[in-house]
Length: 247
Ligand SMILES: [Zn+2]
Image (cartoon, helix red, strand yellow):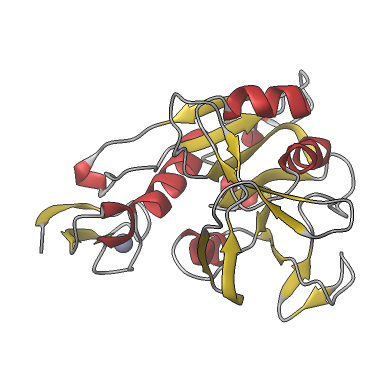
């Protein structure tokens, strides 16, 4: 054990003693009650503080996995749609309790989603500009994309690691790197090493502005490398949302 500390878990709301079981806190600083890790607690903390009425909002979670924040969103949000991309299923169709969606070409109507949530997805997308545009298209005014993605390059420029060639074959620009993927034994190929200029990339792709939320709060069990939460907001039109829908 590296250290323990007491606090209130933002995910399960219990008074707990957080346990840092290994030095790499991002994956090993856990809540013993719910098993959540720092980036999951940071994400739910951000949703709670920026969008306290989230339980009444239309939430889409891309590549949802039912642990940590996903379970909480599914359990408490009345209008929650989890999706996964299955190459053998038509987008928009239900499959294995998910809706099939490709984040680069969403089938959701324009302005139909209040919150898009993605957790460590945007570093695996081959065409992130299309993904950010699709997110912007489908957001309601006043809505937001709340997400984590490791900003491993920090102040250095973002760097594309792999791309798709015209024939659909993967073109590796750097040695291939994979992250664990609960729905694929092969893991997920890392396509981007993002830096803080991701906010410029999102603005040029979609026209939307992004806030980077960095939380270091031990009594909420939030400390680790690469746990920034990004909030990309679509401006609200005056009066378009009821008072219960604004942050
Ligand atoms: Zn917990």
